[in-house]
Length: 229
Image (cartoon, rainbow, N blue to C red; front, side, top):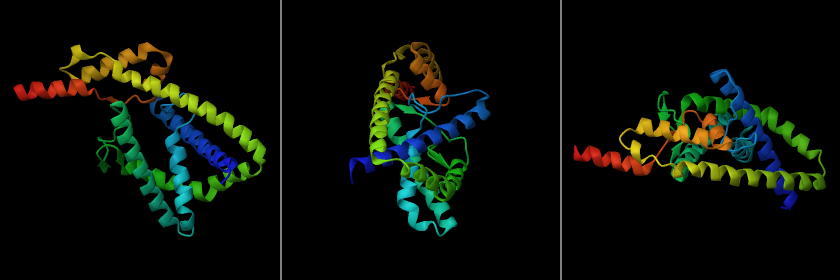
C-alpha cells in the first residue's frame, strides 16, 4: 500500500472525526442551550468517531446484506471502543471524561445501552449512505492532491494532538493538597484552576462538563483517613 493509500484512509478518518464533532456539538447545544466545542482536541474533530467508523467499515463490509447483523455488530464495536478509550484516558490522565453511572444498563459507567443503540443505528447509516458518499468524494481526487492535502492536514492534526495533550497533563500538576478531605471540593477547585489557567484548559473543561477528575494522591489520603477512623 502506497503512502497515498494511507493518506486516503487518514482523510476518511478525519472526515468522520469532523462529522462526529458536528453531531456532538448539536447534541450539546440542545442539552446546554449553548455552543460547546466538544472533544479534547482544539480542532473541530473527535478522533474516537473516526477510529470507530473505520473499524466498522473495515470489519463489517461483509455483513451489509443483513441490516440486523450490521446493527448489532456496529453497536458492539462502538461499545468496546468507547469502553477501552474511557479506560485508557482515565489511566493516562487520572480523569474520567464521561460517566454513565446514572443511566440504566451501564458497564462500570463507561458504556451504556442508551448510547449504544444510536451507535448501531449510526452504523447502518454509515455503511449504506455516508461511507459510499465520502469515498466517492475522495475517489474524485487525484493521488497527488490526496498526497498534498493529506500531509498538510496530518501535520496540523499532530500539532493539535501534541498541544492538547500538554494541556490535559496540566490537570495532574494542580496542587489540591489542602482540599484532601472532600473529593467533590477537590474536583471543583481543580476545575476552577483550569478554567482560569488558559483559554485551552477552559475550553477543555467546557467540552467535558461532567468529567470526574481523579487525583490519586488525594484519594489515597482519604482512604488512610477512613482506615484510621
